[in-house]
Image (cartoon, rainbow, N blue to C red; front, side, top):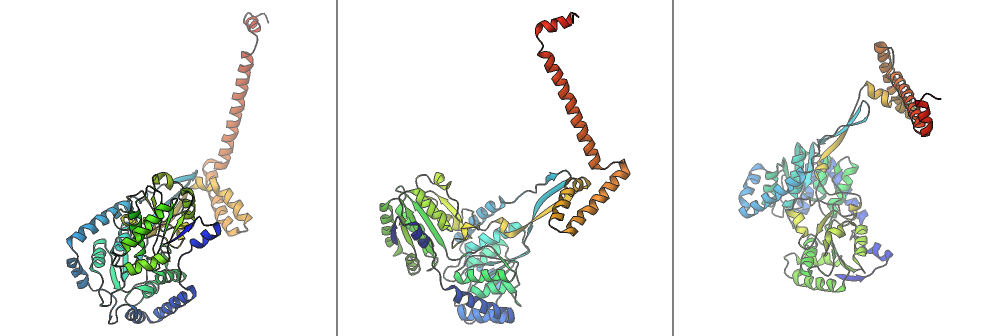
Length: 482
């Protein structure tokens, strides 16, 4: 990793940039594939799938027999690990369920909010060089808790047409509705428009490379929501002299091995820490099966030396990392100054891998600086929050006049009339029943309260004056001499 010492503010902006491919060329590719899928459906998806993944592919949906066989191909050891992760993910996301809370904002005006599940969601699972069956758990588990009726899964087949059995097993375990052997831009396009086989979804979830991220971005223009901009993986580590260089090197490599366009950054207030980590990187890299990919990612990565940890935190907040590890002596204290990150890992033993698999938090997180405005996937991602309000006659009287005044000032007279008609009806009914409107009754009550208040104030004044009379005058008065 290249080392930079105490960069200037202008240099820091440059250092915070992510590795990018040419955007215009990328978006032109996405639009071309989307156009063909919109016109030709399954035929176009299969054409692209044969070109990029499985040359002999004839159908998109994975048949029930293949899915059922997958369970037998997954070891009991892995099944137990998947089950532990599933339980933790479920526990964490169930804790995010909210109770309905009704609030009376004014007399007779009740407001509240309720969650409703998104009907049909699509989850994209990268499956090329790294079959991310863990992402199935991260997306399907909260979707099921939220109550989504349909969960559509797309994942690319390998060159022999196979999908990793752990992906199929995890999909069955978590209640995925249908599974399709389709990846990349074509999978996102199919879920955006719908084809003869792959249904159109309401919202697309899942990480991916820059092609997948660009396709998700385009999906929004065609009316399909997405979870967030989630592209190539990234990790930032802040370390001090109490950190373990071997731990940090392993953490950095864990993200670098995702893909050549991944990025990892080390920030430290001690030059010796950076040297020790770089030494460990060289040692550990040689033993990785994916060392070619990790080595390429490290070319886009860097170590930056700052004078103190406060400067490290400032840069981290500006960079807005997907994952942030605080490998410092007092990580909890330092975390109070963290304002921008997808997910934070505190202390020397909190490796990013824990969050990727089994701690319970979601690993689908915003990348490329989008953590400055986006949150990671949560239970809220799979529901719509619908607000409700109910006005009684009392509520119409409480806020009706304010509504009329504001609508008239905005020159939206139909808005005003909608309330004016109700006010008239309510007042007419009140007069018919009592001879007074509620407003008149309230005015009378206010006048009475004012009069009572004045009377009480007068009495208190008289008593106060009497208390202040000289003692001799009080005695004279008592003896009847005055």
